[in-house]
Length: 293
Image 1 (spheres, rainbow, N blue to C red):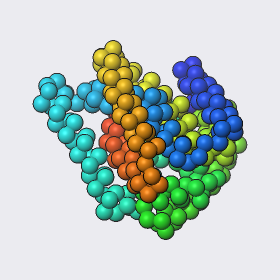
Image 2 (cartoon, one colour; image 1 turned 45 degrees about the horizontal axis):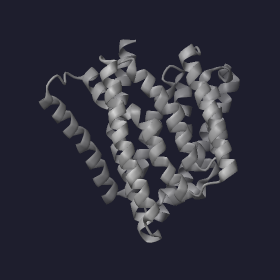
Image 3 (tube, rainbow, N blue to C red; image 1 turned 120 degrees about the vertical axis):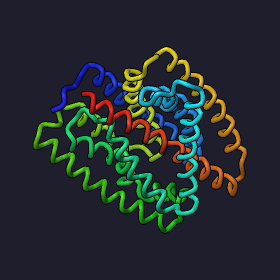
Image 4 (cartoon, rainbow, N blue to C red; image 1 turned 90 degrees about the horizontal axis):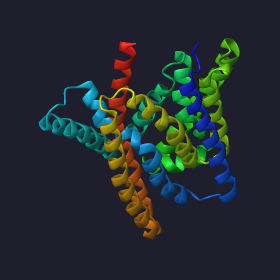
């Protein structure tokens, strides 16, 4: 059974406190879906993107990117993967959405890489499926930005069913192996409670920014060679992206209803496409870290 280390404990505490804070924001202000989407971009930039901004430093840890030419090749491959994902999504949106959800669950399972495998599996699936269980119709509406309406409904229904199975497994594992005493069970219980209280986008902001990103950033900083340079790079990239997100948010607020739907769709697909090479890179680092352990 995994031991709750001090470092993991403070991460759990931040997530739980943030969950309480975001829940209060929702209960008091009740922002609409468009306001949540506009809020998503700057929140992800401020608290989520710093861990993605470490991708070059992670790549330098994995491969000998000791010349500008090699770094340019890495950047071209990175953006090429993102472009390929975006192209697949445009041609086969249902396939793109389904594959992205499965890979996201696999990637998020890394948040519990030091726990038992069953807790890794339930964590990854819960992170993706929990909000669908409680807000299936709303998630289907969001999925419809990324796939045809009927396909979005089917994918949402299948995801909700998988989520229910996962919840049953999580409860059974907790009762059978005293997993309820571990950090993983505390965090995953918070995920399910959040998913029940919050609308899907606010749930995602809370989980992604206050658990996944913080945990990955902490792990990645421990793996990179030059932490000071990596931190400066992360701050610079995050600042530039934040300015871009602010401009995008302004455009979204000024757009009429017909154009707003298209713009949100492009934002969602673009973020998803850029997320894929990041997840590939991080999962490679995770495999190396486990191999060295």
